[in-house]
Image 1: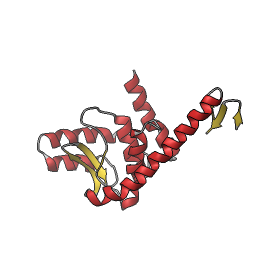
Image 2: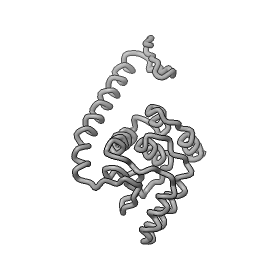
Image 3: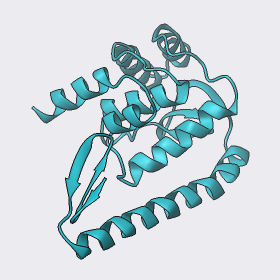
Image 4: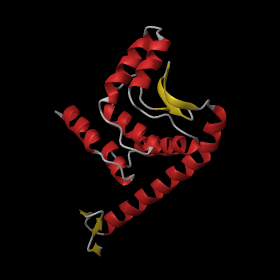
Length: 175
């Protein structure tokens, strides 16, 4: 619903005030289209270049899944982002309790305990990716988050997934 400088999307009303706001929205839409175009072109390259990781796998750069998509930076821990990306890749909301197992997996990886790291990932309850579609969803979701278009919770909602645990993690971090 469009009214003077305002629009409604998903039940929320946004007021941008005037023609400058309309141009701003158009710029954002164009930037989003360009981001998606870049992801579409990059997807085939990433798929050919990287090994396929059906399970969360630790590397020197950090945890990877799918077509080598980096789930989290070693520099900054962002559990909400990690949980949202894994959930989108799997096509179902993953419980926040899985993060404790992933933290243990990371510790064991850093200590050289690669087999123990894999056991912790298996115990997390995160299902393996079955095929390339989950990897593709993950690649696009990471690109959209990295570009700043959505928060992890909003990404989950847009993908039709329960974002309760991701919202709770975001609240914990903001306190």
